[in-house]
Structure formats: structure tokens, C-alpha cells
Length: 180
Image (cartoon, rainbow, N blue to C red; front, side, top):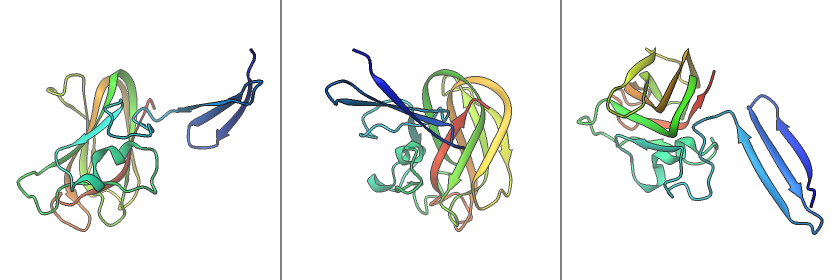
């Protein structure tokens, strides 16, 4: 049975939503985004990929999976407070398979986000290659663009944060990964 499709393109965000309705009124929605790190599943801790993880966190409310849920209005990832033994702090996304990527955007909680960090990639979580370095970055959204590479894992290795000096209690709303 044919399905009529209505498309909605959210300008400037790199996303596309397709909603189809069949003859009996049942609807289905397909969401597409260019953010390779997005995991917008209803259950963010179900193990579906892409999956965010971190070197530390501040508990259930501030888990790393909130940094790739596609919603900057939800809670956010927060590294463990005052834990200087875990320096640098790391926020990582497992993309599920090796993909081509060339830009990583970090959206912080202003006043508490990363100030200095490296963007690193890996295929095996053992050997990491630095793709970009941010030193004394702006207290806001930062996009790091680099020559496109293939990798499965992307992480930011945080060495300093706003509001806390050492990378303790670092807060990131979204970590986005794009092909370019």
C-alpha cells in the first residue's frame, strides 16, 4: 500500500524528518541527521549506538549519554567533581563502526565547559590520534574541523575547564560528530 510522505527539513541543523501515513491512518516517522554521534533513542542507556561514555561522571542525572541525545535543553554530562586523580577528563562516543568524520562540535554548559582539550580518534580504543587541539577556547560552542579520517571512536581529552580550573566538574551539553 502506498504511503504519502510529508517532509520537514529543519534548516541549518542537518536533519530531515519524514512522516508517512497509510490508508488506515497509521503514521511512521523516520529521522535523519548529519550528526554521526546522535543517539536519540527513547532509552538512552539501552546500549544502542552511537553511545557516549566518560572517564567519570557525577551520577545518574548527569550521565555521559546526555551529551549525545540531540537535546541541549536536557541535563548534560558532568565529570566527577573535585576528583583531581582523574585528570584529564574524557568524553567519548562509540559510533558503532568506522565512518568518515572531519568535524567535532562541543556544546558546553556555559561557565562550566571545557576550556582546553584535544579531539582524538581511534578504531580500537587503544591507539588514539590527536586531530585538533583547543587551548583557552571560547566559553561556548566550539567546532574543530580537520582533514577527514575514518574512525569508530571519537573523544575529547579535557585538560582545563571554565569555572573549575582543573578539569573537574566539567559540563558538556552535546558532543556532535560530522563528516565535514
